[in-house]
Amino acid sequence: MKGQVTIEFLASFFLYILAVVAVFQFVSSGIPDFNNSMNQKTLHYEAKYVSDQMLKQPGYHTEGLGGTNWEKNSSTRNSLNSLGLASEYMKIDPDKLEQLSTVGQSKVNYSQFIDTVGVDNQYYFNFTWTPVVKTYQSFYKRDPPTGLTVPDHDLYQRARGRVHYGNVTLNGETRHFLVTEHRTGYNTTYVSGNRDFQNSDPRGLDSTVSFGGQIFKVSGFQNIRYHRGGLVFLESHVKGFGSSLDRSEEVVKFNRYPSYDADNSDLMPMRVEVYVT
Image (cartoon, rainbow, N blue to C red; front, top):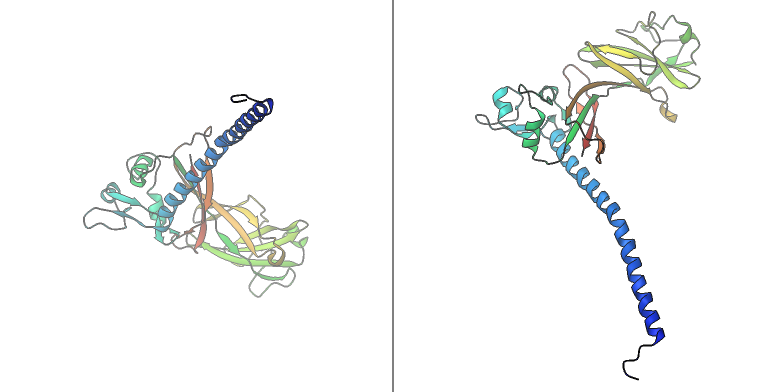
């Protein structure tokens, strides 16, 4: 008969409605996660763009005929129209980095950074110099090379047979390093201003070494299978710059590794921690 609705039709109709509701709930439940993921990707993309500009470009000012030496004086800083820290591609110029200051009017402050870069999100940058001492050369501990005097210390005598050595120049001062192996691997170094280590004391992780008055922490030793003892890792915090981030909000963080083109120094890496929210 026309217009008659069967039980089978009603059952099928309700099953269809239930299926539509279920699919809607499933899709809508994933929307917050999708939005969070997209927001994080957007922050990361913007931060990559901003940090690329800072680390790969020298920056520009419009004072007079313009130029890249925006750090020169107050006039060039005040006419800054592009903020870059590079002396060359991915080499940070210490004079440019010195001219960043989160607050104050005598340097490029955070408000000027935001106006120049043109972003709405909040940023914080952490700059840490991370030199690497190449200690590839080695000798047996009781048979040092000519002109090198080994430490007169019990711990040195208890070290395993193969000793590594090398040097690095930072801030105009050269330091020589010996690296010795103990039970857990290469974990001890001796430091001298020349190749005479006789009166040098052993130093482990988190001990400090001074170069031109700047303090560096021993942050690690190379213990990878085929290059054990071949490197000593140092670090010294140089500067923090930016906003005090609201940790209750989502913060995207990643590291960049340009070189630090410091005066009278071997060219060494710098870790730049980029935070954006």
